[in-house]
Image 1 (cartoon, helix red, strand yellow):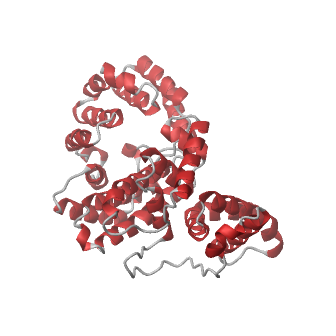
Image 2 (cartoon, rainbow, N blue to C red):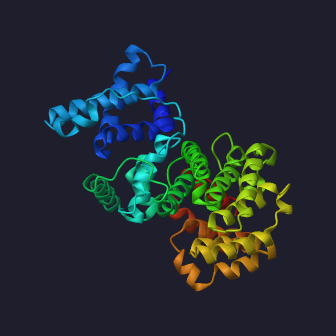
Image 3 (cartoon, rainbow, N blue to C red):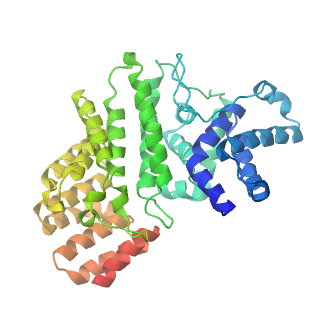
Length: 416
């Protein structure tokens, strides 16, 4: 077995949990990240000789803690960390019980609440959580935020310094403080899932570990909120969980064996995970029953209409277009308007979709977004304007940085 592949697999599956535990033990983001990186180097040196541990993640936590202590000693900084490191720390990868006022079902959720502290800017909250829990590189996060890499690196550095300087606790907040942080937490989970569902860069369309991580975090969060009846109903958390399950249910059918994209209308619906669809619809029904609508519930409702359509022709595009119009009132953005235009085009014909897409304000706002040009190209293709469609696909390809998406666009150009 290739040890490098094993280390890569452990990092993908356990990065968030290992790092969150190390941050909790050490109380320092930078120290924990550096210790984890040193641990990975040690694993590559030792595992070929000593064998792969039965529990690689637990081994990484133990070795990472020791390396942090060694580093503090070398820097003669151990005194300020004695209270944290003097006592033996029992670390378990098992889910702790939800007992006591401050209990939380997963160490990673503690880290999310820390990263989403009100003292941090909204941009810093999302970026820091994507870096620590999602395992995204600084370059990937910078790309998602459309900012230069040095700018994002400075943003992350300042956020960590703020947590350290303000002594922000690594803990679940009190019941009274949860509501003020919940929107930020839901937004972070949503962005982690989105980056996994459609990777902004790289070779693969889907980053399965990020989708799974987001779902693993969101479901315990829903359970935590429901265990606090004094918080009242939290339908947006339910809506977000439903949205993730419904989208993830289509994952087996979204790419072929070579990783090439299969568009929704061409997918084998027999491969969709019916168990996930039923679970997602059940969560959505519970959310809607609270009669407190919000953007995650609306997006989940759109996903449910896709998931429950027996065939592409039976998709309720008029209802989807209406839901995107409703979503725009909650989160007005050019991308939401793009999706509404696509739904209108699917419901009323390609020329109706093109009329909305080519409105000057929307066209200017999305000129640098490859999926905008791909949508224009698709409707031009459906309307038999082949030359114009090819030009729009070429523009989309020039803006795209994901290999699987580039391959799809290249196939469309070749067809024309």
